[in-house]
Image 1 (cartoon, rainbow, N blue to C red):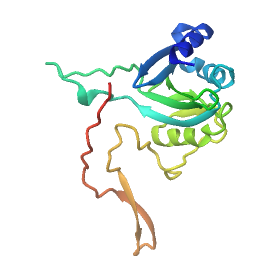
Image 2: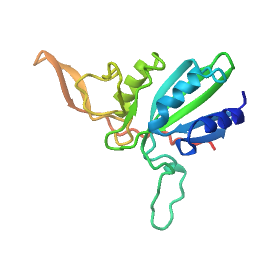
Image 3: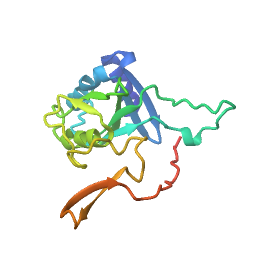
Image 4: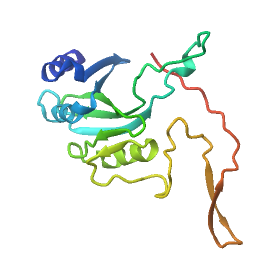
Length: 201
């Protein structure tokens, strides 16, 4: 099934306001409103025309400064992201039966407390992926069976992949022989300059 057929069928099943489609570089991205995410995912998995039985990956994205590096500032120096919401989860799906891949993206409504429904009930393999997105971006996947940190320490208070988190971190741990224990102290690393990102169009 070609992308045009996928778009036509999904538009016939769901309200046009719930879906947005973007085809670029031979890939299809379907942006789904949070309220319709589970219904669209179930349809893509179970419908015989799709059969996206395999969830390849779920990742979080922080769009707060998306495209800013490529932006030519006007006299005011202002920049506005093309996305109204800051945090999104991106789901990469594979249909072995039809030899197709699609990407689903859903934005969380609240930037201060981003929340999205868990798709673990649809694809059990989303469990650790959603835990990773929660740990690194702070996206809360409600109805997740065991949403807790998976990469950072349990007492870690921030989300290190958010744009405001410094690349060199805020704290470091080391063993203190005089105290005979591991201690936490402010990081001694100097600021690291990262390579500017390139946005492919």
